[in-house]
Image (cartoon, rainbow, N blue to C red; front, top):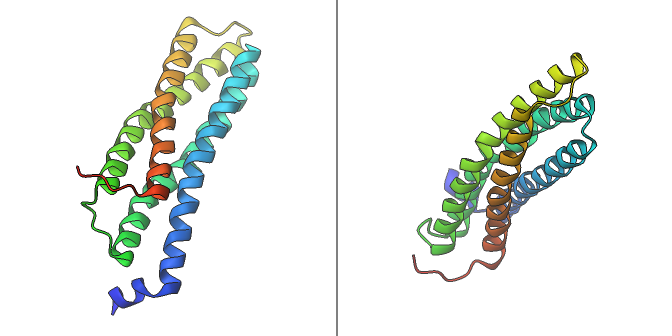
Amino acid sequence: MMATLLTSPDAVLVLRWLHVVGACAILGTGAGIAFFMAMAHRTKSAALIAHTATIVVIADWIFTASAVALQPVTGILLAQALGWRLSEGWILLSLALYLVAGAFWLPVVGMQTRMRDLARQAAKISRELPPEYHRLYRLWFAFGVPAFISVLAIIWLMLARPNLNL
């Protein structure tokens, strides 16, 4: 009964929609967070960076984390509904890239939180940002690049569904 419900045209459309919205949330939130953090960083204003980082951390937990948690669920259900094997090359590569993106994203959330705290402390005592902040920012940026590229590659794989023999 459940399998029949999940394969109905309406259910497939809803699953596809949820999966695409999740991908958009991950990509869009990631790009937005990177942009706003980079723009705040350029000001060198500890107060502005603290404020921006506060919002960024909240957005990452609300939007990115929820989409990241739901993406495998909608992906597996969609694949099953459409009769795709999870062992297909493009799906396996997508899953591998998903793990790569996650391995870089999880530390980034911690870095953002620490950068926020360092900026708050500097703003509170009217000091410049400490060297640890700048070190974390460079790491944050470096970790963001492979995570973002992985997400872009996953979206391409979802659209192109190339015939890969892995």
